[in-house]
Image 1 (cartoon, one colour):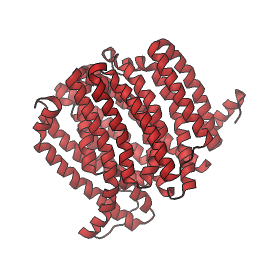
Image 2: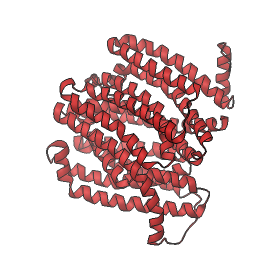
Image 3: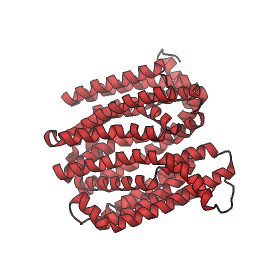
Image 4: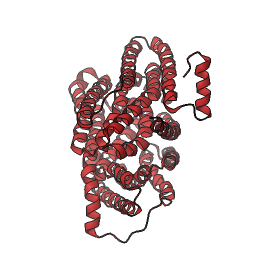
Length: 496
């Protein structure tokens, strides 16, 4: 287990530091956007990003995710790997070009559907270009991930985010609200340019030109598996777009901006953790998924590490939400704090579900994966659709908590039934502890924000101290940081 834990911790450290830099960039980007354009600008960026995600997910057919699995399985055979790479890039180019043309032709209708008018048709047309660029970027990052080139993947992520942010802010400075769309256009273009530098270094043999039948034989299994991933991801992006549309039309663009602010903050940290997990854990699990004992051990190991490292910060976020929202946005976004608290409590269930959900992906159970993913969207959208008119914006965050609880239950049932997953005692204890503390803290913070903030500091310190000790027991006292921490625990009379 120590080898698994050490490898997982290393990849999480690399991607975690990468995503931390990415988070700082995102914070600065959103802060500047909030100050320059207010809630309406943040809401507009949210809608553009959601539209990009929805169409990109559909056009990509999930081949990016299934490609990671194919590359991980074929990385020891350079000839097969070269063929997979060629098909992966060609498929994303053709599918992205088709999506770009369709969006451009329908740009007026899409603008009228989203905003009730055609004022944003040019921006929608530019998003079509962003879709093509994003799919090409996905092909290159999938290749790096499948080869487990985590360091290179981290560099691509950071540099592209930095370039995209600078370009987007410059566009807003000169063009105002009309420049918002450049946030979603420049970043994937930068990703392609930077990723090319690293993908060219990969040890892949040159192959002859593939025939149509050879391309079909490689593309078909990727598309078959990827279609379920695509439908699952598409269900989420369509759901979010419908929610944003519903909020905009029922409560106005400012309310959509408040929802986007809370959602953005909640996903920044969770996205950091899950990106760190998926970068190495997914290809690693794909390699051992047929060995149930090894897979079960790896799943428990990842679950424990994820909660030990990620759980304490979620507790802190629940308690400090009012101050964090004001700091990252402005006082105009104060109403988003309560939304963020509910969303963060829901993300505890999401964090606990993620390592188990990957077992369905790694096992290529495409239909099951789709049904599992869509379960959250059905619950989330249904609650909002029924209760938004009567309860207002707060119901969107409550719906996330309910949806992720249902998702957690379903994921556990599927992992147990299909993969023979068995909970280790430590896993049960960590999940139970973090869920209980999160719900208790949520109730306290809603009643008394100051008390919730103070208690969250103590909860975070206690669970963080406990969690780091567990991680150190897994990886052993190797490395300067680990040795220093081991000495610290010995000093406080809690030796490892």
